[in-house]
Image (cartoon, rainbow, N blue to C red; front, top):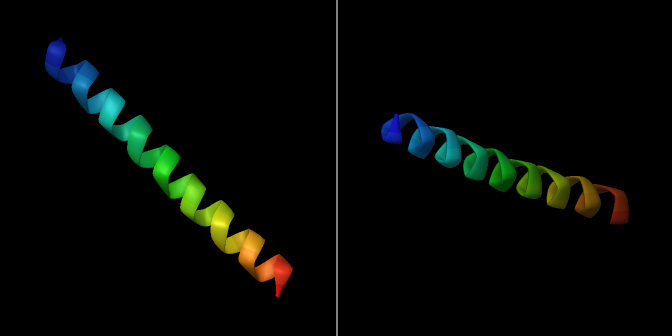
Length: 32
């Protein structure tokens, strides 16, 4: 069960990072 939680948290962190990067690209495109 510990492994499952570690994978879940890792996936959430990766998802947050990807959304921040995507949001940054969108803001850059809208600003230019």
